[in-house]
Image (cartoon, one colour):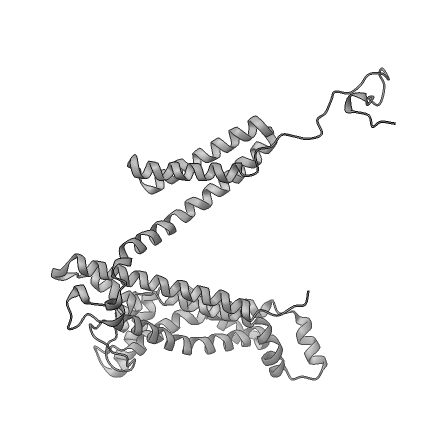
Length: 365
C-alpha cells in the first residue's frame, strides 16, 4: 500500500468523508546557510566605505551599517521564510548589531594606538631612556622596567593578603569581624584610584617628610587597588569548590587547614591564578596614583626604595602633556609607550588564560 499524500488524507469530524484537506508542505524554504554572515560582511564593507568616502564618522557609519543589515536580512527572510522566521532573524540582527557597536570604540582605540605607536617600537625604544640622547633616539627602557618593578612589588604584597583574606571569609569567617571585612572590601573596590595615591602620599610625607617620592609608594598605592580584586576573585573561586570534597577530606580525619591547603586551593587554583593575573592587568595602567606617589624621572632608577622612578603610564602622560620643542617626536614616543602598555596587558591576559587551562582540575572522560 502506498503512503497517502497530504491531499489524500480525509478531514476528521462531520463533513463529507471524501473531502480532503488542503495540501500542507512538509518542508519550508530557507535562506542559504551563509546568508547572514555574508550580508553582515557586505554592510560592514559599506560602513567602511561610508566612513572613507562619504566623510561619516565611525559611529555614524557603524549605526547605518547595523540598521541596513537588520532591515536587509529581515526583508529577505520574510520574502523567503515567512513572518515567524523573519522576526527571529530581526532579533538576531539587532543583537549582533548591538555587539558590533559596542566593539566599535574598542577597535577604534586599538587601531589608533597601533597605527600611531608602531613606528617607534625599534631597538632604541627598548634600549634607551630619554636622558642624554636626542628625542628621535629616545626610548622607554627606564619606564618599562619601572612599571614591571612597581607592579611586581604590588603583586607580591597584594596576592598573599588577598588570598588569605578570602580563605578566612569563606572557610572561617563568622560574625561581626567577617561582616566588617566584607564591608571594607566592598568599599575598597569602589574607591577612585587617585584616592589611593593621595593616601600613600599623605602617609609617607608624614613619616619621612614633604616631597618624599619612591617606587615603593606606588606599589602600596597599587596594592590598595589590587587587594579587593584578588579577594573577590578568590572568594568566587572558593565558593564553587564542592562541599563534598571538603566533607570527604574531613571524613578521613584530615585537619581543616590541611584540607584547605591540599584539597580546596588546588581545586580552585586555576580560577585564582586567572583572577590574580587579571587584577595585575587592571592596575598596571593606572596613572593618577603613580603620578602622585612615584613621580617621573628621565633616567634609569631601578631601586624602588630610593627616589623617583619612571613608569609607562606616567611616561606617556608626561610626554603628551609637555612635548616641548620636539613636538611631534615626543608625541610619537608617547603613542609607542601606550602601545607597549597595551601589549603588556594583552600578554598578561594570555598568561591568565594559559594558567587557567594548565591548572584546571583534570577530569576523566
